[in-house]
Length: 89
Image (cartoon, rainbow, N blue to C red; front, side, top):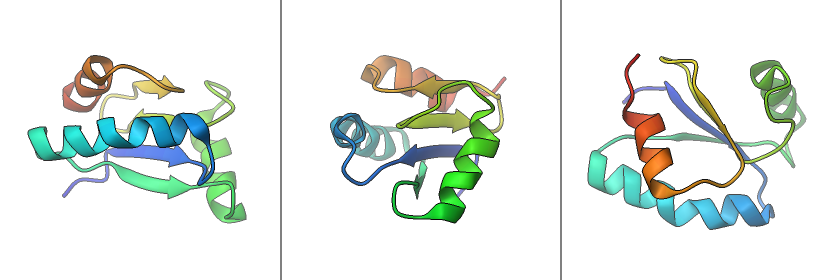
């Protein structure tokens, strides 16, 4: 398992909830794992989001691929999520 793919999310976030089936599909179909970090109810995780976000998004869901440095702010399509997760450079 790799820790390169991260989703920062809020438990009650509507957009985060909308993305959940796409994340589950991606993990099942492509065998990748996205580390999920809840930030609305965890102050330490919220600080980590702020440090990681660097002003890119300012909210959740926020996806970061640590290997490529590419990020996604908010909801997206399955195709874009898949391309983000599988890109290696």
